Length: 270
Image 1 (cartoon, rainbow, N blue to C red):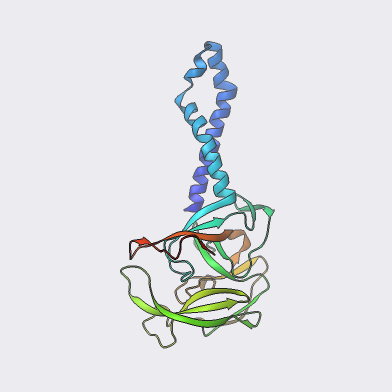
Image 2: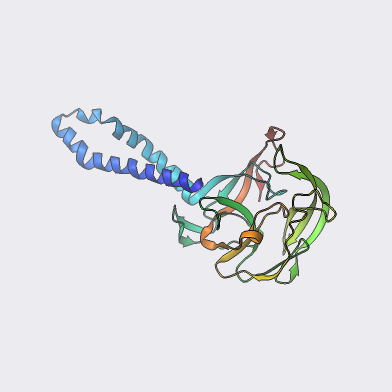
């Protein structure tokens, strides 16, 4: 969806710009040759091109190179980001990329562990996902009994409270434990299904793996809602070229169940 919008915007900018150039060098001289006032009667197509070209260009520059707004469709990053949250993504955080083809023109930095990043799905074309980076190139990642280990160091978990989770207004509700995870210095909340739970969505879907090495040029992504997230545990590493930007903050979040904005998510820094 985002790629399609950007492609449409790029085409609209190019078409309106080409129409302006053709008018300047071909149509306008002919009109002036026919009448001194003919320039005031330029075709509607030229008028529209002149009006919309600067708007298209400004929006294209902002959307392709600076920031974009991304709507988080699921609860895979709960409790950090709730479903239907509008996230401001910094397009320039990791470098300047040529739109559509995602060629990196100017490197700026690389994703760090703990960053929340927007990226193209490595398995589903034209789908964009947002997850947390838990492994950078060269890291050894293990996930054992719902505990994350990075390079042999345990990401300590501190229990906070219990709450409920679901996949929408009409889906079943289950209990989850809210835990603070310390990902090598980056502290953030996660959801875990209690060990004794049988009703929890991911109660029978836990995957253990050991010393998985992240290859050069790739990243390992996970959702904070650990038992209800489709992430690198299931479809593998994310290539660096797929990464679009870094989540900066939550602009606002819409609660579909309560039909109102979540007051704790306004301008929440990520």
